Image (cartoon, rainbow, N blue to C red; front, side, top):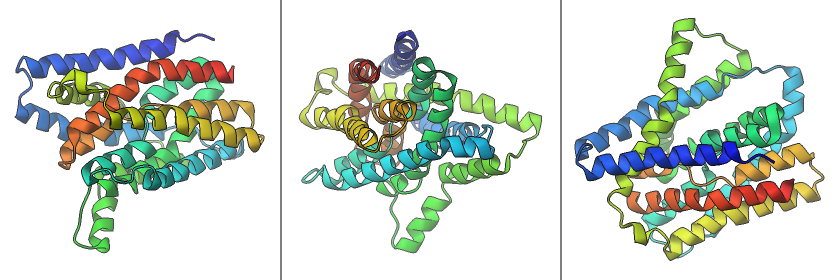
Length: 303
């Protein structure tokens, strides 16, 4: 099994994050620059990336072959949401919201697709693309409610449904299901904007990390979260798929993607909505560091 693609992707993410760290430390990125980065990711590059992820071939044959992965992925997201409600008792509210979001939202989209293709081949990449659909739906619907506030339920629903990222999910689903062909210039524009999402998001994480004492990364709460995200959830998925006699390829993709580290957007949202952005960044960084060990181990278990 070739892990070169996995290590290259992880190395790329950390290199960009270090750039953001250095730019913040040297004053090249100011407080205003950090705010601009946050808005660019949340309102420009991330919505474009979401729409681009739905631009895949979709027909009845693919629907049938991917039905199992959709069911499994939806069950995983529902289970992660439930775990988020019961695994963090006694945590301060701001930390709890970050942990709940980071439990249902992993880096399956950025890191997971590359790993799935490298480990499982072209069909693995297709399954990984389908796998992320329920996650994106959860992270920009239920997940967004962890950060946004409104005076009543109606206002909250309106606020969530009009958020650029959830609008992008609906637009992407429509494009995929109806197989809408966007005009060439528009498709190219979305592709190029989406291409900057990983860079800007990890740069932002680096700027937040510059405000964190590095030796404080491994604290009790971040270690606990990393265990849940990288070990406990994929173990539950592995056991459930084994008991249900799920196809080995579907099982492999589901286990590996469910064991991805916290998504960088966790820190982005925490920064945007005045939650505990320092703690969110610690969760992203530590879980990503530890995933360099746990993800290859899961791949070996599945081999």
